[in-house]
Image (cartoon, rainbow, N blue to C red; front, side, top):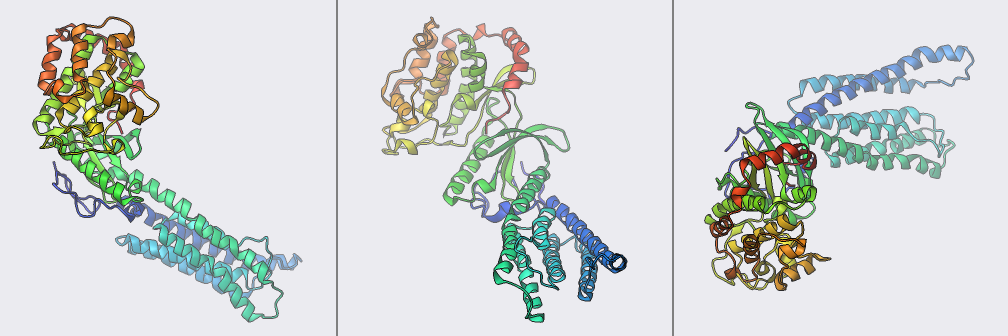
Length: 539
């Protein structure tokens, strides 16, 4: 499951431990991808050529056109002191020389970007010297240096800290030029207050330049990330969540569709403890899914860390809808279809439990029903990010604070909330009972105004039978299976996923949801399913 490595790709596969440094992405989110660097180099060269052309234009205008206007009695408005000619020549030669150097040093992109920042500073100095040869302070005038500070980082963005440093140095060029002019003509008509007001916009622009520089670098990195993820090219965005995005992707060589889940490093850098937790969960989910072979567990193709610190894993792309959206869009399901779906979830959980894993986040949004080849209503269980080994000793976990427990409040078993019993596979079966309740009624088992209130109900209240919740009769044997899974004591629930599935089979409802009915439903609702479900996997 490994892919070829390159300078822009860290080895992937199934590591037992996260690679060194993976849990603490710091400044890597500020880096450009390799192709982003190549693009930035091209823009540095373009900026140098434009700068050289502008200096040449200014030089030509003042050497050739200024004398003409002076002879036409334009009051010498285009007067051009001799030193400014020297400065313009330096600007022209320096800019064109940089454009040539860029072509020679493309293999050293960061060196080229630093040279580009040097061009920004040189241009600011030459502009300042030209404009202050004769001091005419005016507090409302904004120097052309400010324009250079703002525009250049947008053309060829470097690292933000370098952009800021170069901007502050460039902003100081007007002050240096003023100082030189004052030393040359100490009796000149100038005011320190006016000079201060003239210089202030330069320093403001030095900080504002961080905005376009950071935005362009981020867009460039996002545009190039597809070319960094091994053999997969990213397509449209499927889902955006709190920690990252999910994209549709295609394998370069075999055109195999996939879904790639990305966790952005900038979302982790501000909180090291949170970053460690997210990275641990990322590797835990990848390793857990990779160890499972049930066709009802989402398949993992690859995972790893991109060169900019982005965590990613590649999964099969599913054509369907999760159970949360299914019920919200189409209403409660027929009892026979509920049995059909829950039985397939039991197959996935049965294998995971056989490996000693507890999912701990079984809920409708983590269960997909989809078209799978020629099979319809095929179930896939997703998001094993909270999976962990079963507690070896009953009660070993002790008393835990409710808000510190992982999971979703509406689907958490009483022992998960209170910590009074060891959390084992039966917590997943309780959650699966909650899912069945949702599918039958369109309501959660318990509802409340806050997560704490919902968890309290799960811990101490007896659930209302599904038939009473919907106000119509439901198959009593199926209702009994769901309520047994919702027992407060783990010992009163089915002990294994296989037992849960056996109880579902005993209802003799499953055969009623046959292939013909399933295909008829999907034929009628496929368009609505695809319009409702924006993602093959939840973010």
